[in-house]
Image (tube, rainbow, N blue to C red; front, side):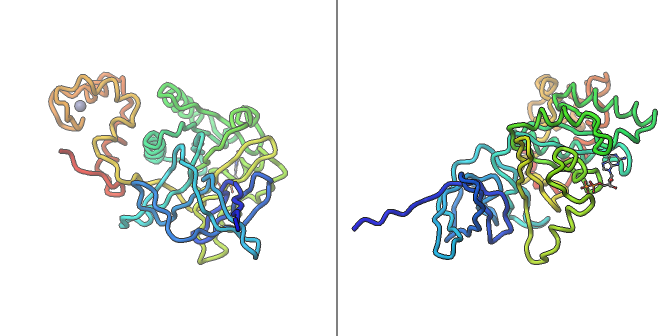
Length: 316
Ligand code: GDP
Ligand code: ZN
């Protein structure tokens, strides 16, 4: 007697910690659990399966599923489970790109937050674009400041989009870029993420200001991330409640590598283990003085390497 166990394929689109919603290749949504413990090489995480994971599962009699296999990930983003914890959450896997949504007003997104986010996406090898929202309400002075930032970040290799979710300005450019990709969307609450997603796809009808409420309804379930599809063929990964991705197991020396404009300069530092803070003959400091490296970017570098939130190893 041969019993063939039929395994179905799908992608995890939502994870609450104990249940995973899997969208099958036949566009069916199946609630799945995992059985036993998945051991993934080199990662100690509280959630072995993440949104974006390509999985196989076995259907059970109650029409739920048990996940049996996870395909190897192209990339993943993790963060510490809690500030002091040694364990981590995998937030999402198999991401094509990240969108950092920011605003210059109401409220202004800090440069510190932007640079921290970019360091993180650099570390995970996820290309990041910066979306400046609410351009409809920038005054002349704000617009000038915005232009400077667009020039700076574009020159560093981060594409910038300036849009308004309210007037629809430049939303089509975003659509072109989102099409056919899986995009992680992040930003502080209030930047207009829900409004932006609504303006991309009217059918979805996320009520503005409600996005986080919806997720906080069930107090005992933490939604780490959720993937949804927009009508024109874009997959969005939303990370409710995750304001920052702290870097996990990150080598302090690595931080400078994650600043693209430091990379070339660093080669010319007098000491090979230069921290670019106080050493004589530091080419990075020299470039800051000569205006080739933006001073705020450098200050944010200093702030990051002194930050306890990042679990950084000491210099050797
Ligand atoms: P979220 O917390 O990031 O999801 O932000 P929401 O989408 O809920 O938007 C927060 C507030 O900003 C709401 O009052 C929106 O109406 C407003 N808002 C969002 N996008 C824009 C925009 O492009 N222009 C203006 N003027 N207001 C916006
Ligand atoms: Zn140096």
